[in-house]
Image (cartoon, rainbow, N blue to C red; front, side, top):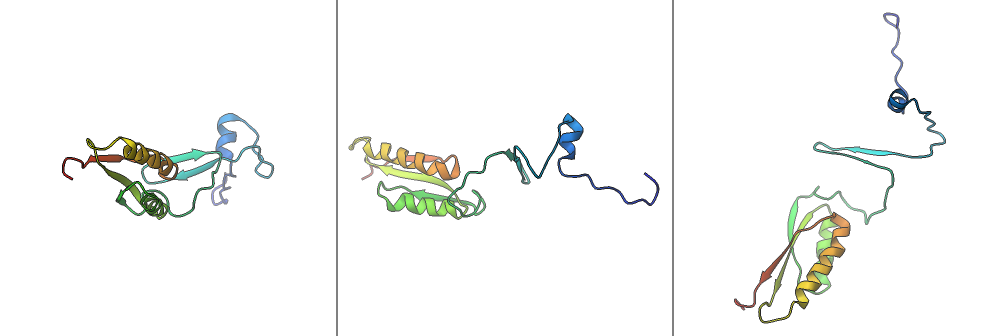
Length: 131
């Protein structure tokens, strides 16, 4: 390149062409690759899956959500997750005086909630003796 000549900017996909020799056609692409670069990690994916909307997980800090066994508490946890909170979940149960039914129900609710935050920690607190 001659001194003072404008530098030619590499075209999108030049890295793929340079490394593999593959043809890159951005107007009629066979595959669209998405890359998200964050401060601590990078995500590369090909399929976008529509979510419930809201903010990214962890963007609003961590909260503790109580799961009572009814519908209101998992909905409240989900709404906090949707606003970007990473939820740690707590369920108080009546063991050893009551069956494991409420614990199993809490685990099922957490399994459903994990669709929105990928993983969640559930703390089961035996409250029967104290009660």
